[in-house]
Structure formats: structure tokens, C-alpha cells
Image (cartoon, rainbow, N blue to C red):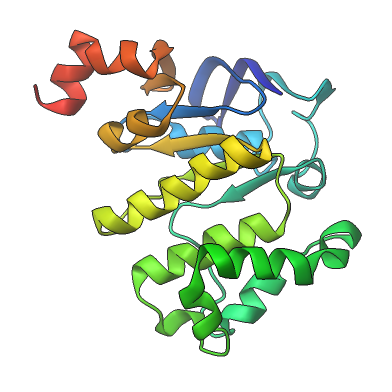
Length: 235
């Protein structure tokens, strides 16, 4: 599905990513793991067309996306839940969800998809007419995830979904992602600092350090890796 090779990118003259390479298969959850400042969000922004890479390839279902803008990438089915949620806080929950229906196909299916996300997150239906900025952090993250699902993703990117949230809320969101992969064939790229939670739901993972892929393996292999234990799990 997604194959990234030799990816280099940064901001102006400052390079952040160095020859990043990884892949995501159909119907699996892949975690990109690493500490704050390792380059994870820069990588996501490059994949989704927000940053143009200086080198490398982003191939999605056989098509090269590395030189296309974010709208083009979105239309191809890569939908992101951004770090920090980035809601329209003065708009209602429903209006934020409507923003997820960004093209003809998603607008045509909006009513059906809205019913589905309300089943996933019943609180959002209760608060549909409430300003998004008045919700709790966990509820705002639900809105961000629901908005992405309204966009009918083929690949869902979750960028730091645990940031600032209670563990039970994070578990609920990751459970939704796992169920979507299992039942609907959506693939998930989970970008996360909380390695314990990320590896608990992932099939495979990659550890990024200082803009490089330092380790890769199955979730079980990474959880058992001595470097991961010492550097990230405190074991």
C-alpha cells in the first residue's frame, strides 16, 4: 500500500529526515516510534504533501506522491489525524465533522458515515451542536478521529494520539483503529511516543532517532529489543 524509500526532508536549509524507508501493507497497523524531536511529525507532513522532500519516494498503491500537494494526497485516500487535533474550535462538533467530507465522494456518503462515527463515539452525537472548543481534550480527539473517518481513508495516519490524554481515552481510540483494520480493511500508520501502547496494537514498527530509522521489526521483536527497553520503556 504505502512504500517510502530514501526520504529526505526538512525546513529550509535544515534537513530533518535522512533516507527514511518503511512500508505499510494492506490491512495492518504500523507504528513509527520515537521520542519528541526525532522527526516523526516532519515525516508525516512530508508523506501527506505538506512538506516537499528534497529526495526520495512516497509510493501509494503504485502511484508516486512525493511531489504532489496535500489535497492531491488526501484525494488518494491518505487521511491524517494531526498532532494536537487542530479543530475549528469556534465551530460546532457537527460543523467540524462536515469538514471531513472534502470531495464529491465523501459528501455523497456523509450521512451514512456520520451515523457510523456516532456509533463509534456516541458523545459526539450528544454534543453535535456544541462548540468544539468547549469539549474536553479526549472528546476533541474523538472529533479529530471522527472527522478523519468521514474522509473515508484507505490509510489513516494517527499522529501522537496519546498526547495529553487519559490512558482510557487513548485505549478507546486505538481500539477503534484496530477494529477498522480488522473489519474494514483500512490500514493505519500510528506515529507515537508512547511505545507501550503503540506496540500493543501494532503488527510491526519502526524506531526513528535523529531523523534516521534506527530499528524495525514486529511489535514483539521491538518490545523485546534491549535498546528499546532501556531507551523507551525504562526497563
